[in-house]
Every structure is written in structure tokens, then in C-alpha cells.
Image (tube, rainbow, N blue to C red; front, side, top):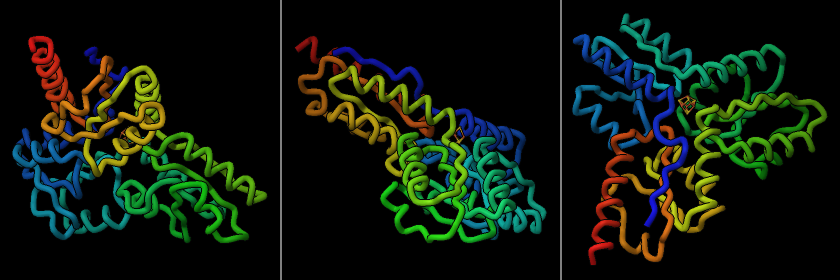
Length: 283
Ligand code: SF4
């Protein structure tokens, strides 16, 4: 069995930077909290917790010296609440998310109605909504465009981890319904590169593992994209989930991983697959 890695996989620069900032503060002797999970990967979150990074869900619950704002960003009122408590804020908001926040503000000044192509409960979407004071809408697919109100001028952006084709399909549906609108494609380059590389790989293998958190948006999108080209697409969080049934009859096996999957976890999957391939050769 040949194991082929995606050309681009694992941590994006925004997640790497957030983790590096938290680790730097820890190394400097700070008691570090994060508001929400720093990365949507349970194994990496457990590693950080073991190193001393505490996760809390509200500004009121922060009890360390420093608080890290994760790459997804936070609403302005969250920053205000942390400042009021005179906490040291380590702002790891990804520059791509900051760009979306700025566009949301601009759309508001231009009198448009913000439409985010994404998932309403995702923390990045929630942070961006905080920068748009007016009524805003979140749609996950072009089918949901019909439910938007009439008489508005939509200003459309994307959650950074959405598939390009979903963003474009929503823009097309809005163009067919509204005479005036503006669209800024804010899918980030890290997402685009991982999705394109995984799509290419899925087309040339018999089966593909997507390594990443089950609750990670970018990992789930990668699995969706790969499944279209390769029905034997399997999302796994850890190497222990690999089964011989997954590998039955597979000559070429692909491995891709979302932007929230650490390199050490991808390596454990490769190690287990190589061990299984070695055992199969001997038997
Ligand atoms: S997925 Fe994109 S927007 Fe999100 S943290 Fe990574 S680089 Fe930034």
C-alpha cells in the first residue's frame, strides 16, 4: 500500500501563531487562559491543558494573568469586558479574520445588510457579527437565500473555512434575486490551499483519511470535498481509529488534515499506517 500525503496539510499560520503566543506567555511565567478552545482539536487542546493553558468560556471566568483571544477573534464587547478587568490581552485573532471584521464594519457604513456564508454558531462568525451593529444573516447554502428579507442590499462575506464553491453558489443565488449587492471572498488562502490539495489527492487514491477534530469546521469541509471525488473518505481524530476494513483492497491511500490538526498527530497516523502495511507484507 502506497501512502500519499496531501501537498498542504495541518496547522495553518493563524492557529500556529495563536498556540505559539500562548506557549510564549506560559514560558514567561504567566498563568494563561484562553477564551474558548484555542484550536478545534481535542488532542491538541488536551496537550495545551496539560502544559498549563486553562480554557474558560466567559471574560468573567478568566482567572489568570493573561488571556489569549483565539484565531477566530472575539466581539468588541468581549475585549471591553477584559480591559475593564485590567487583564493582559494577547490578541491572536488571525489577520484574515480581522480583514472580515473590517469589511463587516465597512458594509455597515455603506448601509448594506451583512450576509455571512458560514455556520451561525461558529466562533469566527460570532466574532464577525459583533462588528456589524445592524441586522445580519448567516446562510450555509444557496437554498437559504430564499429566506433572506427583500428590499436589502446584501454585503456578502464568507467564513474563512467555507468551500469556495459554496460561497460562489450563494453569491450567484443572491445575484439572481437582488439588483444590488457586494461580495468579498474572504475564504482564507490556508483553507483554499488545503481544500485544493485534498481535492487533487482524493481524485488519485482508493481511500483517504482526513485527520482532524470531529467538531472542526475546516476538517469537516475537507471531508465533504474529498468524499465527492473518493467515496472511501474517512474522518479520524486519532491513529487508534484506523481499521483494517478501511484499508481492505486499498493500493493508494491518501492522508489530508485540516488547518487545526497538529503535525504530531498526523505523524502518529502515518506511523500506525506504516506499521500496519509492514505487518501485511510479512503475513
Ligand atoms: S483557517 Fe485561515 S483564517 Fe482561520 S486561523 Fe487559519 S489562516 Fe487564519
